[in-house]
Image (cartoon, rainbow, N blue to C red; front, side, top):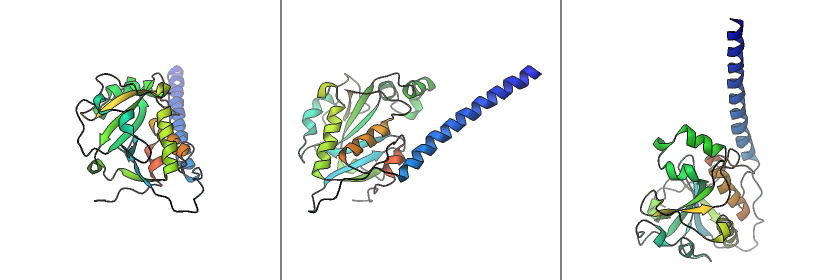
Length: 233
């Protein structure tokens, strides 16, 4: 009986430690939201804005950028020939997200998620990929949040994305698609408990000069201070 109580006590202690660690993880992420990194100093002259958004599915974030123009041609970096089918003629944007290779390739829906893949991603066992999708303006919805980027910020954001490509060159993963208008590309870095897909998005925005918390493990760390897309806009 004494041994059973001791074992039960150890088990309860482990559960309590796991819950405390999870609470600390989430609490730290929430606390850092109130201390975002300062934005670029405003220019004395009004500047044009590049149409860009953060797109969230409630867990994962992508950066949505113009396919062409504003000093960057993404169609040359991520060509349409990498897609499973020609994109619609009005697909004028790309969504770029970063994440764990095994999770990306084998979890197209949450129903495909397994404990092994989730633990592998958290442990940082796998290399990363970029997921790039061609989008139409009509594909954006209430989960899109406006990024008021200046041309200079957009140039820095673009450079950060290009830096995520090994050697600065996009290498598509053959046959890897979720649908007809997306592709996966080899990327630098490893996903982990302290460097998630959302941390990559936050890092990219900080590099561009957008005010962001120092650590953004969750989507809400990024979107809470951005304006959601208005219906019909």
